[in-house]
Image (tube, rainbow, N blue to C red; front, top):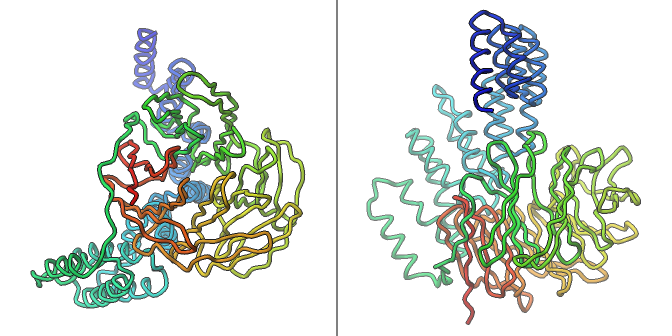
Length: 550
């Protein structure tokens, strides 16, 4: 086989030297089985329309735009650049989307808007904000001071103050402009004061970056931290589970004693199944298609043995049994949700009736649609929800924003938590901040809900009659991006390389300890062992921590 490939490659080179690019491309497609090389060959030969046809098959929208621009068909070029930008935005690749906007469409203001969305999100907020400020800077007018003051007053919620200071430190160092330094120092002092009141000293450690000429400031701040505050313990010495290194693992779920994960390698999606004794199996799932990103695993072990692979525009179908055997006590069914309804999706979840429910907008308004596990539609419920904080055009699909428990659906939208009963009646709880994540106890335990917002976490206790806030905002000592309730009444809030452990008891969340990881935390993993928690970290490993008890 290898000899045949060498012969075909040699033949394509000869054909290209003879300017027979169409014939060479045919060899690449039919015998070498490499469509990209065929498209590049046609492009080299100036057969741009034919190259475009192949790039369209490969879903390479940006490249299609480049070739239409070469052909002078600017309207078509912009259409495909816009398609690329939307795909990147849906995949939360905000920096890449901004790069296309600037480099291909010279749309700096649009790029800034999309980078601001990235700052508000949980992917790479600091990098997005840095790029935003770089685009905002005008070397002649030097108006960065005005820009950071505006951002701080309008787009920096409490949980992002430390991240904002990190970005200011970098920008302040790069551009030593008097006006910028003065504005940055004023913001730094205000943030430090606010955070110290919350017993969070992380901002205090940064203040020296804004007064580099004061060499004693950092050491003075350290002494204050050590003497002035009673800090919670820091849990250390984790155990590690190493994952296959040639794959970027980015999403994890658990099913009883099994750890399940998805990762990407060379444009392919791979799946892992592991137990907590170190046995790991891997399998290829399918080739990645840009418009299906981001992918996530949807599981609710107390309700079903189905594990769903979810994306807004999933086209690939997977339906397979992963059998039980000596390493895995329970069988699971792995499926893709390739039948989601058309329209603007909000969320989906496994329900208590061996099915899947989807919250979405269609021409009739807000709908809750119910399906079997195989996608057969059972019924639609039109919901009556009037809330000024919800803009259907700005809502985004998040499978994790919605859960089912004890006869009700719970879903975070905008600045509210919505509860829907079996008849479609809607109850709304005002959160006072933008919802980002929800954590809920499992099916067999007393119902507790914690939501993560842009201002911190809220503990909610639902009853049959209503949802009530059990606590005010808490968790301000960390910029939370992920939350999860453990089996022992503990809540984990994680962000960056830090996690906070709270105990939820007596209607008051109590900070029990902190965890500092070596790599950035990508996700929190619930494990079937009391007083333990785990994290998916960078560098493809899972860290397992024991949460000490008194």
